[in-house]
Image (cartoon, rainbow, N blue to C red; front, side):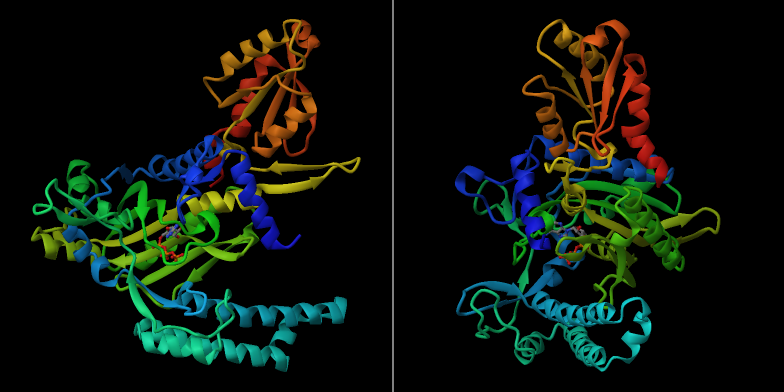
Length: 512
Ligand code: ATP
């Protein structure tokens, strides 16, 4: 099946099974805004828990906060967002569609890369077992030709972005003969800057009201609380502050479902270090964060780092963790070495001294910062994309199964009496009333047992238990595994221990 079709199926599965709905659905939705349904909220909360505990529980020197979405407007002047949080946009006059100029060019670079991969794939087929890929890449004239075009475009694009040369960005689009995917024409407007922050007003009277912004990142809430936390928590450098919360960006192009939203959620951790040690910590955090992703068991080959060439105004190193989505490798998390830019700017704009006094060396300095920043929704999407599977079964049937990591699954256990009589429902309720304090359980007695299994497969429930007539005699139930579909008899008394080992967040955290 084409990857595009797989993605469409995932999107409709998310809606059909109560994971993600378009916002204001009865009014036909609102662009790039989504709501999480009864299963989605559980999965999302589990992802947040996994992140939070990996930060705050597993690191003695990391604490959490929850700062407000509204912040003093000067925060955004100090951080540079008022002046520089822009995307270059371009319109196609025929389709009236708006695009990010940088994304159009990046897509063009990706096209050259795809051509190279196609050449390699063709050669692999032609030469069979004797194919030497490295040699082919190094010597094929066709590969060389595409590589040259790709590198030249990349170089020109990087220079234009670094200088934010809008005329040059447009010229690249014209020279590369990039067309609008909708109209197919090259009738482009000039490239303009567009600020991504949403504005609103606080204050009850029009006169007294002042403009404030919805935060475009949660990080600034951490920086402005640096002194509060460091002093009240008596934190010693190196230490970190973690936060999970909503962020808002007026994205120009709303695409790819919950990958790019206008209201989304971030999990960010700012780690304060001694100047000069930041690049060492940057590497450490890159590895720590990659290990967090890999512990989910989605396959190491599905992750890669993408080091930034164009650095944000505040950074001296930056790298993304990309995940293999159905629409290619895409950024899920950013790790940035932000220098002392933010704290220094806030010191300057607020007039406060924001420093750290090192009791061992008796010196004061402005700490440097390593940031790890991951989007909850993008993480959710990567979990969904990897877990959604259609399996052919013996006998020709297919089943749709969400092979979610058990610790993230919305429901851990479905409790099912085989029939709705003979005391089986009562027994099932009794078991559930005990286990519900420990795991998220669902009771289901409707339809045939096969149909009930399918329903649980589709929402990713890792285990089902069936209570049958023998249960009343021998105190055992049938435990069915979602992934293998194997069934085993288990004593009711052993259920809790067995499940704990397989579905708890603790087991997942131990894998990091
Ligand atoms: P992009 O280049 O895709 O716009 P970014 O580099 O601007 O992302 P950051 O500012 O580094 O993103 O934000 C950190 C993380 O927040 C991203 O890795 C991503 O997971 C998430 N994120 C950013 N923008 C959005 C959005 N519009 N919708 C959903 N998640 C987002």
